[in-house]
Image 1 (cartoon, rainbow, N blue to C red):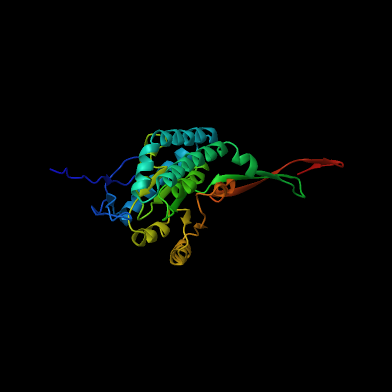
Image 2: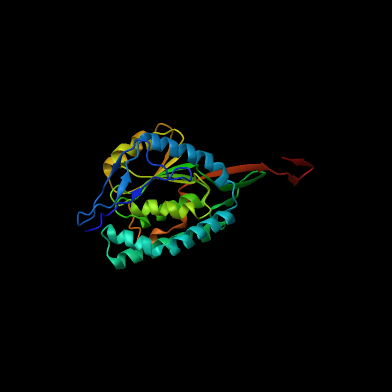
Length: 293
């Protein structure tokens, strides 16, 4: 008798745990052969709200860690991903990639994490500045994390598109709420399992699955999200982002890159999710008969 195949239920990742969606719904995307990929949680606006609450709570913990410590944690993520490489390759093949392309995507994802881990304690030295001013002031600009970032992951890749934007977001001390690829969600949730075992504090990264049409509006209109990152070319989504994000002046970053290419790893992706704080510090100007400030 043929054995009944059991489809895995891929739960969402919120606040360091793996709950089922509060809606109780699921959907079953298929690959190019028509095979069902699994039982995927069809998240709701309540899941978005729960994710943002957890991301905001984790922000102070994550942003106050030293840059060096964040680099250690990103390197640990890469180590854990390396240890589960074969599982990710199998999932990508199941989602219709060839074996060579699947191996390439996983290897690039690991390398990309290492790349950004190396920048953790160095980006501020490159992006911060001391500014010349024509007055008796010491003037300097420093980068600070934006806050909670909503990430709409690339819909045409399962892993590399997610990693390529998630890494620069969290490198700079931000926390993140991710909407995974609607039709290729497997690697995103398996990556959440990697995060959960990689010293990443609970709530720093929250990953939900479901239908974009249902989830974009509650994400982009949420008043406690400071920035939105979108990877894709949909003009409809771009317009929706601009309209809904105007409510609290969220920063919008739109990317249409081929994340497989090496040029897609970039120091300035980190700066896209930083706020510049400039400080004017008065100094004594000694000259003439008296001191002036």
